[in-house]
Amino acid sequence: MSGGHSSYTPGTAIERWIDARMPLPRLMYDSFVAYPVPRNLNYAYTFGGILSIMLVIQILTGVVLAMHYASNTSLAFNSVESIMRDVNWGWLLRYMHSNGASFFFIAVYIHMFRGLYYGSYKAPRELLWILGVLIYFLMMATGFMGYVLPWGQMSFWGATVITGFFTAFPVVGEWIQQLLLGGFAVDNPTLNRFFSLHYLLPFMIAGVVVLHVWALHVTGQTNPTGIEPKSATDTVPFTPHATVKDAFAMIVFLGVYAYFLFYLPNYLGHPDNYTVANPLKTPAHIVPEWYYLPFYAILRAITFNVGPIDSKLGGVLAMFGSILVLFVVPWLDWSKVRSAVYRPWYKLFFWLFVIDSIFLGWLGQMPAEGAYVTMAQVATAYYFAFFIIIMPVLGLIEKPRKLPNSITEAVLEKNKAKA
Image 1 (cartoon, one colour):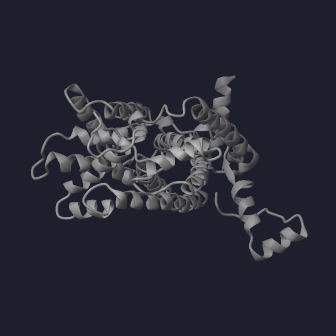
Image 2 (tube, helix red, strand yellow; image 1 turned 135 degrees about the horizontal axis):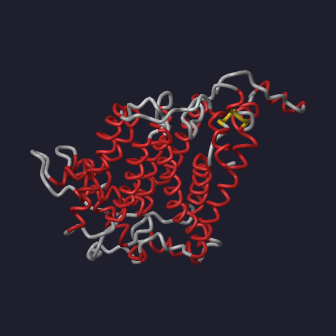
Image 3 (cartoon, one colour; image 1 turned 120 degrees about the vertical axis):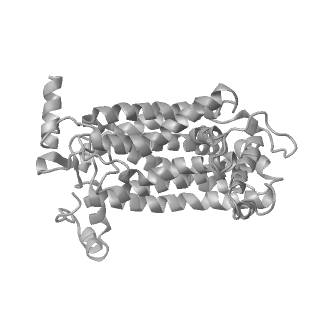
């Protein structure tokens, strides 16, 4: 889908002059106008464009906020309050940035679940998937460091707890912790480090996004049937067919984002973070932002030792392993059929996995005691079993439904069924 002769024709002398020296207009035309996409893409495929818009919003608001932020433990909290009260439209920028982080993660989770459902990680798109997981990993690091910057109670104690995880690693653990902290405790050097990295990482994310889009245009988009386009009738130009759908989805998504921005700006935050950080007063219940809660639940689910691995190290390994396993998903699913639409058993286990992930998120905010620990252990077991056991086994034993001969045939059959 990525090859072929360009159909771009410069319309003016200036366009011809630019095209002969730096064919950027040709690149944009071939990538976002004439680029062929499967004719059966649904709204689940619009979240890539939504994520691009959210990344731009986060970078722009973050740059302006950085102009007014004071990266000092004695000034940080008050500088954020000053942004809210004294900077023109500062309240709007701050709420756009803080709520934008949550909606960024909402979009990326939907995007990743869509990839798992439609098999977007299968050959030849393994590198495309790996780049996407790398973007997610960088997002998590960026979000964590950004959460520390307001220097509220949850910011301080969240940084204390998370950086303390690294001490579980033998030999290098304490060295890594001190490197992150800039000392032996969360203090001014920590805040400076986190502010610098929080400012830098979004630009790294943007760079990986460029590689991600490049890889997408080389291999072409997947589609709900999981069948590669076989003829010109299987595809349509990106513009207007995909752009109109993307634009509508963006309007709806940004509408929900705006509702939270103007009516529920603090709903997704934690009230303790509106109290200045106090190293002498520990919050009753330390929890991360909601988008980290499933992994926090996995961390706390490991309450037992496994041989020489104690429970603390086991929890940290499980937490990082729950992310790292995503990198090897293309080699864990052995089925030759890409889309879950034609894999009834995989579809069942996939939706159980979605429920399990949401359940882990709920458990992450509950106290690590009693039945909550047992439920977290069961949910964690299923999380890893889905990738390590269910995916490979189903690839060997599952009998998929009959695939259509082409995308066009699948579309016609669907339209016939509706009629």
